[in-house]
Length: 190
Picture 1 (cartoon, rainbow, N blue to C red):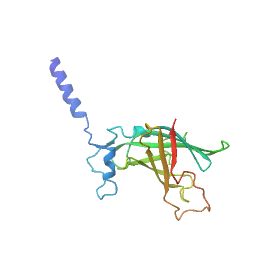
Picture 2: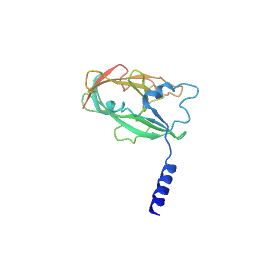
Picture 3: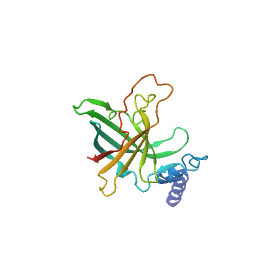
Picture 4: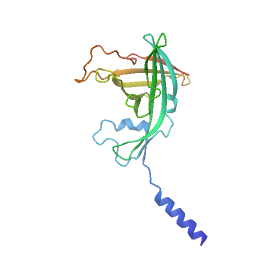
């Protein structure tokens, strides 16, 4: 009787486990911009090879007399559009001027805040691409952030820059300052 119970329990456990079809994060780039997109049978875009870990941590650097502190986290989120789970990076950041005055600080925002920089994909070059939306996104504080850990630095230096999308027709301000580096900045892991 005890054996029947154990076998029945095992069968129920196996049947109740939902199988996951995993796509490694480094293969996601192959499906972006294609007609089919990510195959419907994929349920998890997973960092199976721990390629995102080298980006995580706190990184600091200077650019145009501003001090930058980027806190990079690896998170797992679920899509609202379909049953799909992602491992991705997000960035919370703090920018100060040379006197310590805060220009922008997203470090206390929740992960799902529009102002927290969200991961998109791991490029074939090994760089990671994220989506940035600033407080004046309609007037050009927006775009793709590219970051890559420098080889030969034991993952202690990284380069980062913003490729701006530009203004939209909804822009109502003139002369909005770009607060993130639009040229390459070298950051040091803390």
